[in-house]
Length: 110
Image (cartoon, rainbow, N blue to C red; front, top):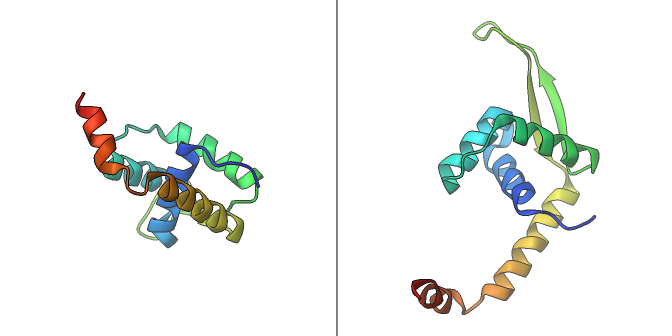
């Protein structure tokens, strides 16, 4: 499956959190709201395309409905491989960080 990069992990977590409302702009907003990181929609869409090519997410397009004009939205959902990879990444980070958060804070304080 390959290793997930930090940005890919953030996107996958956002897709999971947003569920049926996971489309590019909302994903960017979710990442910004939770991490304070400024994310461009272009970067999101590029990464989503790569994730889709790898079979980690699938997309579906919905046209503008009665209450919405403009371009169709492309919604994303996690595939099982993405969920397994994301959980594996989380488990690795958690195992490495176990018992080290306070020490990390002290080192960060100088």
